[in-house]
Amino acid sequence: MKQNNVRLFLLGGAVLLLLFALLLPSVGPAPALLGDTVSPSAALHLSAALVHGEAAQLRLHGIQPGVTFTLSGSDAEHVYHIRFRNSPFANGGLCLYQLPAAVYAVYADGRRIDASLLNDSLPQGYTLPRDGLRKHWQFRTDRHGLLELVIRDTEHLPAGYFDVAIDAGHGGGDLGAEAGGEQEAQLNLENSLLLKSYLEAYGLRVFLTREDAALPGGMAAEENPYLPNARIDLIYRSHASYLISNHLNAGNGQQAGFQIYSSVASDLRFATAVADALLAAGAVANDSGSGLVASGLYQRHSEEPGGYGRDYYFILRETGGAALSPTLYLYHNPQMADAIQRGPEALLMEYAFLDNAADRNAWLQQRETLLQATAAGAAAYWQL
Ligand SMILES: [Zn+2]
Image (tube, rainbow, N blue to C red; front, side, top):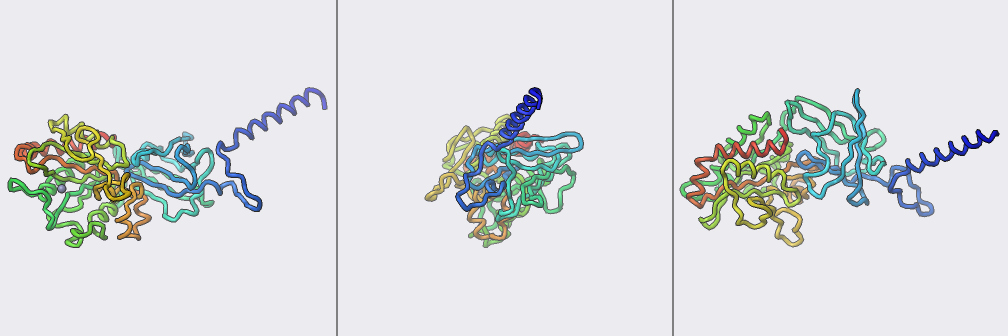
């Protein structure tokens, strides 16, 4: 071998070694014990793919937060590598509606994720329509059991699928607050019908938990809202990405203004957008309730033993999908374990105090403006 060739040979070897080192994953599998067999995919197993609103998070067995996920896919013109991390907030993580249509292989710190041992089936659904176009998103496994995410553009939303659920609070024998000859349950229904029409003007398909005075799920649901066909079950079956639960407040007769409750697991972006729109339309924020986190904005933790980190109000705690651990709903509806891998991001709205005549009358006079503002604030958060 000539000296030049030797140099080339050594240089080539060094380049190969460097390439090999670069290709090594940054987090290696644990060293195998004698007699163990470790296949390349065995160390990264999906424990859950959870979607809350239009945000997705992936959970891996035995891997702590901080892992970087990468989606790799392509269409006819582009190759996409999209990186994301899980978020401490249920409404953070991967924003599904921002993804270009493609079939994406999913990597965690550079390695494919095995989803073949998952107990629950992988979620799929639709984003809201933006400029008339929705994304159908679907987590699935390839023929080797490895995780993929498929994003497809579509104008079509199947029958039985909705973008937003509006919950008219109370109903049936549960009238809610009563004052000045008004009943909260009836006003919640009127407000919900108005809000539905304002949201539909944005091209959204809107589901109502009730369209008359009856309680969703009938009288049995008054005792137990977690039963099949009651309020929570209807919301899951609507496939809605977002939920707005409409209420009016009661206090000591002196309080005034709106309160907006978000899940304790979410950040406050959705609530803030709606509060900003209400304030701009002339509403006032009420800062007197339990769980106040910012003016007019509330997050209230469960007060049950060990309940901190979960929501106090069942309409937030039980409807948001597995990201919020809806244990009572799941106990009564075990057949929905697959369906609740996704759930809506919710706000619980207390628009005004019914037992304060001045606040009640101000609300009744301005409610069309203020419900339009609610819809506009939500649409701003949704980037419609
Ligand atoms: Zn109420």
